[in-house]
Amino acid sequence: MTLRIVFMGTPEFSVPTLMEVVGQGWDVVACYSQPPRKSGRGMELHKTPVHEAAESLGIPVFTPTSLKSDEEQERFRALEADVAVVVAYGLLLPRPILEAPEFGCLNGHASLLPRWRGAAPINRAIMAGDTETGIQVMRMEAGLDTGPVCMSETVAITPNMTAGELHDHLSPLCGDVMVRALSALSRGGLTETPQSDEGITYASKIEKTETRIDWTKPATEVHNHIRGLSSFPGAWTEMNFGGKPERVKVLRSILAEGSGQPGEILAASGKKLLIACGDGAVELTQVQRAGKKAMSAEELLRGGHLEVGTLPS
Image (cartoon, rainbow, N blue to C red; front, top):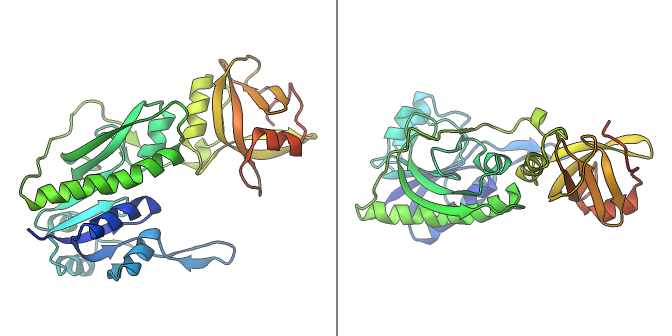
């Protein structure tokens, strides 16, 4: 059976799924993405990665700010889609939208549901110290990521993996799992498994207020916090360069031996930048000073003097 598909997605994470769906020969009749937004020094309008990819493929693109109006819902119904493929779209899908396609809406989600329902599953999984995650294709319901799971692939999270690295691994995997789900759907063989009522967690959006490193926490939690926010938005701390405090993003760390007051610099020479935590210590291996590119700890120490024994401002 040939499927008429509406694709709904916004960020770079969603692009490989769109490309894979098109590459497999499915009929993508339209794409929905969030509206262009102003960014950069000139605050010019920029289309989303999915918007640009869809246009390059000659697919019509719609960018409503909401799907709640009768007009938008009628326009969606008029597309006569068999199924909608949704990957990190970012807008609420009202019930009339969910029910418009004959086979509903299939969502590619970056966690092992019901763990980490919500907006930031990749970051939250690493911040929590999870050792595995995955991609699941779920049939969408009105609730937040509550629908039955149709297809799943599990991925290991290694001890020093960052959110950026996990993102880049899961993004193409999402496309692979989604096209397998569509193939099964076209054959009438897509099975659904209800989510468990146990183990439910929510991956709330990352807030600016939680990006500052809390050195009073154990080293393991600090390390997970750093890698869970790398490379964006980035965990940060303040360091004193010649007595002047400066905000520094910490992009990579490893667990290390050491003890001292939380946030105390235990070593700052050669390649080693060691910071004490509430229990144990972490070695910072990649950082970024304000207005500069990411650099190794060795490059940071060559460019600025840090005193052993000093604490964050």
